Image (tube, rainbow, N blue to C red; front, side, top):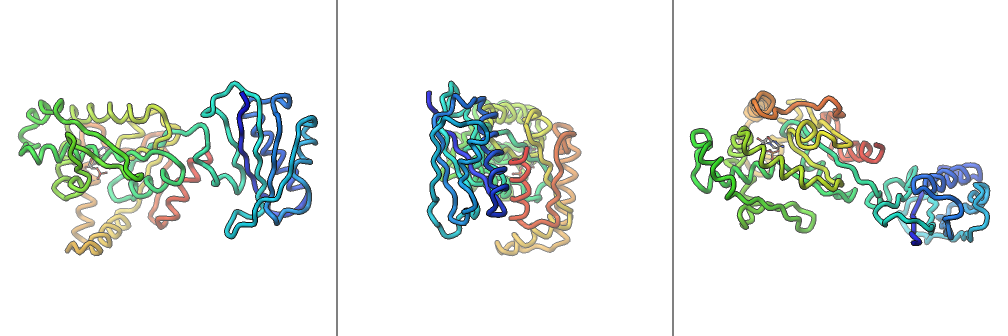
Amino acid sequence: MIRAIRGATTVEKNEKEEIFSAVTEMISEIMEKNGLTADDVTDMIFTVTPDITAVFPAAAVRKLGITDVPLLDMAAPDIDGALPMCIRVMAHAETERSKRDIVHAYMRGASRLRPDLASKKISVAIDGPAGAGKSSIAKRVANDLGYIYIDTGAMYRTVGVYALKNNIDIASEQEKLIGSLPEIHIEIRYEENEQRMFLNGEDVSERIRESDASMAASAVAAIPAVRERLVKLQKQMAEKGGVIMDGRDIGTTVLPNAELKIYLTASVDARAERRYIQNKEKGIECTLDEIKADVIERDHNDMTRAVSPLRQAADAVAVDTTALDFEGSVEKIKDLILNI
Ligand code: DC
């Protein structure tokens, strides 16, 4: 089977030596990661942005000993805002690998061009206290890198909404809620890249964000039988990889083998201030002191509950967003994923 393999790389200077070394690195990566020998390659087509004039990139391939393969250099279109000093390749090779197992090589400054083509998408676990920005950051990173974002808090919220709708008092009627678990069908659908939650067929995506649903979620999240059920569902959803899952126990319990575990945090003051600004924007009356007290209380509840308390997994990378803005936090997480 002939498969197409893509690569792209960048140079900082329009100089022969640097172009040769960038192309050698990119082609070596394509050959090694796909287990190819020179005999397997049928052809390579290169394009260069118009700012590269020092040397034809294909010349580097001949130096690598790939001599009897047709090679072609072409000019890439001159597009406003395109990545400068970029060398792209489309190589064709004989291989038994499936399309999904082909490794494409996006290197140096080009590593961000097509992260969605990366053949081996990993599983990423993001845990941390409320208000550290987990869901908004994870959602954006997943969107940029072609990953599926799974918000596990939304699942606990959905079970909480079931209890509210059915007038089950979670504190005093735990057994009733546990007995109802087989009747609680939670479905997650993705509409225009948004995760939407369905409870027994009803769209509750907005309802679960109301404040009584937050309280109910926190209460149901402390019930072991509820956790067991949701953790099982979460593990199934992550089976194929390519997911960014956020919650409190993802790195420790749900995805203990995740290739990347991130513990996202920020100081109590920073988290309280962000929530305060959000509330003000929504017209919710509150004081900064009240919010701060609430953050401290929620941290305490999350970290001290008996089942799956929030804690940093031993192998998690701690990312503190106190001094980072949203874009800075997104970049930081993307760097961690792309450089694993
Ligand atoms: O992240 P969130 O605010 O949407 O979470 C809602 C509640 O569910 C919160 O009290 C913590 C709990 N939760 C949990 O215990 N484990 C998870 N994996 C995700 C959320």
